[in-house]
Amino acid sequence: EVQLVESGGGLVQPGRSLRLSCAASGFTFDDYAMHWVRQDPGKGLEWVSGISWNSGRIGYADSVKGRFTISRDNAKNSLYLQMNSLRAEDTALYYCAKDVGVRGVSNWFDPWGQGTLVTVSS
Amino acid sequence: DIQMTQSPSSLSASVGDRVTITCRASQSISSYLNWYQQKPGKAPKLLIYAASSLQSGVPSRFSGSGSGTDFTLTISSLQPEDFATYYCQQSYSTQITFGQGTRLEIK
Image (cartoon, rainbow over all chains, first blue to last red; front, side, top):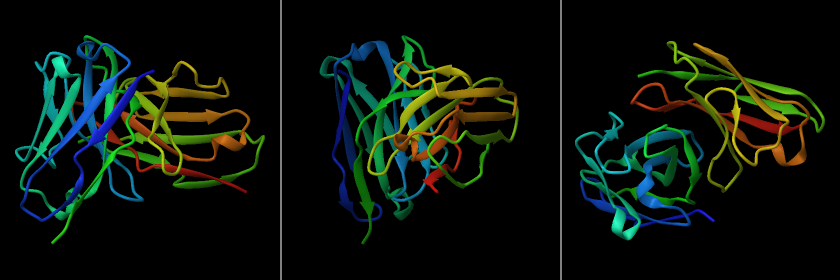
């Protein structure tokens, strides 16, 4: 069974940093692109960032470009999101999601983890 | 960025009803359109990809259609477990975007 378990969320002051992790199991991690998608509590979904299976292709939403960095460690079956210069509007539940394409990037997501909550507030 | 607009924003229906949700893109996205279902407190689940392909394990009462800018998700006969929020998502652009969601409620 595919499992994605996010961690690293919490309460952080504006301007500070946080690093999210996603531990993957149940599939060949280094065959798939991975993504971060966030959801403002009670609101809609926003794609944040994606990374190809070999880290050769990386993309960011304009809202986080220059502040967030996605990375992966295929040896550890793990995905990361380094978030710097955090703002109140970054407050959200952050989901890790597996891309459907094998050794490619389809940009549709299945499955998703259960999310980790990031709250940016003073 | 490509804007995705869903209609209606909310919908009340009864078990057994046929329901259609619409998603419109601000520019042509070919068939790069996906649909997700989200239940309260749960992560989204992929239902339909590439506009009309049913994801493995998803009941056949769900179907998708459309291309270009206009797309629909249809549930042929609503079941109690289908009451949820539905999102469309375009995967045409490198700036991936979602619709605002359609909340499907029990009448």
